[in-house]
Image (cartoon, one colour):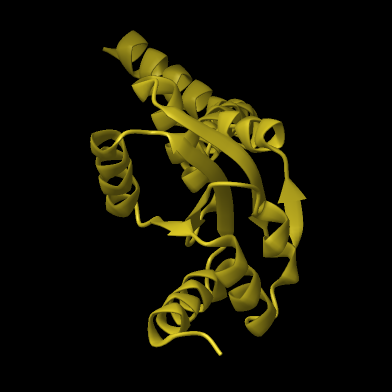
Length: 183
């Protein structure tokens, strides 16, 4: 029977993993206290919960939460970043932080849904353009194509209008010429 503290830790882990969209396993043993504090601040500001876990308690929480795949993230000293929402954005945040800060945080495997991703696969996911960037590119391309389409559609219509106006314009010109001859 777990102690009250361990039971609280298990409940906290179950809550963190119950609605997460991505769980990223890390080895934090290369971090000092100030680096760990800075990392937690950066992740918290991005909506990511970062928890140092006891492997046995995470295993119990995973079983109770019916998320057995998360147990594959446990290996030695483990802390897990739980992200909620856009998986790719969270992958970008943590990989960029590790690259930019130069801290001794090792990113291990991650879990998205029930699929395990290696650290290399997570890096590849993080390197892809984000949803907003792709949407901006798509809008830009659509705008260019729509402008071309409007020109293509407008050009024949303009020619048709000139052609239809030509007889009446010619008639007006002939009448004007007659009026000026009579004057």
